Image 1 (tube, rainbow, N blue to C red):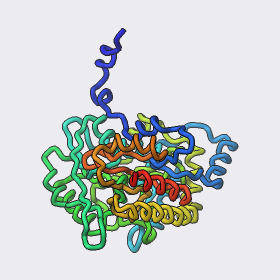
Image 2 (cartoon, helix red, strand yellow; image 1 turned 180 degrees about the vertical axis):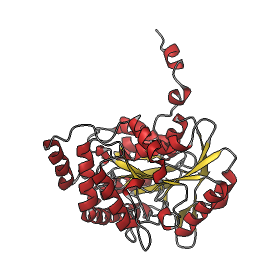
Image 3 (tube, rainbow, N blue to C red; image 1 turned 60 degrees about the vertical axis):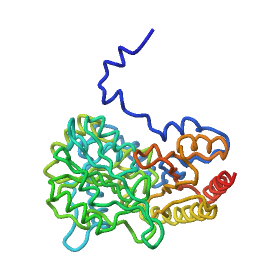
Image 4 (tube, one colour; image 1 turned 45 degrees about the horizontal axis):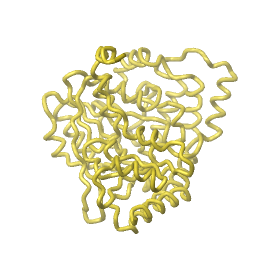
Length: 397
């Protein structure tokens, strides 16, 4: 009995969606005794107790009913206050009506894509890139146009760089938006203010939207945050900001984030939330309020821990003289090329079998990823040192 006719009746956008290369490795190596899993983009720490306690109190209070589609007013107030603290300044503050609570950052991204792109449209994405950008676009019927990041020595060591001229050459009459993820998954590329200004100028010139994924903006190793489009944009610029609580406060499993958008888009965004998830559970939103209002110390401690893990990993791999990478100034990923590595997927499978370490193959991140591995170092420094030692031994062998 064949299922081909059934499958053939499904829309091609869904039928042809690619399997995640990260999930493939997870399924291959998951559960192996002693394996150190560095393939998925999350840390090893559970959600802090004060955040979970806020959700527990909400359950105990009986807050288990439908909620406002845009999010609890108290959470939108907390988001506006948090953004004003971190991204505000003289003459710049944030209002609650700019924020829409979503079921994680992925939901915020999907809503942004639905607002801007559909069949026949093109959206530019710097690559290598988180694969969900392309997936969200292709499922919507739009086409991803990749623009390669460069890994080059600019006089102070290797650094990832996005050439605005290359972006400009990729723009066509079908282009609707630019997706700019900075600090970036998987490369750690962190745009400078001049780079952001150049990209914003291109968007203004061609009437394009920018989808700004700045979810790693607080996970940086110099200063309190990374440069942001908030630093260079005007109130009337066409920018949608995607955010999540997953990374800063160890809340990946809670699935709560937000979309920041011009307030006049509110009714449309509210509709898209209603017709996709019908809102985020109230106890989850109470947990998010606690994270935003009380979680700054958590983030500070996490950055200190991540720096130690990053330095241990980079130091061990650099000592092999067989690894090529730009030390990340943001995110908790190292995107690393190994000498002689021609097939990232095959090598990742071998590393599971021979080193008992789980990495994400660079091919999972699209054009420009072949020959690289993404290593998530959001774990205890001792565990990262052990993983780095195993990888160094594997490279020597």
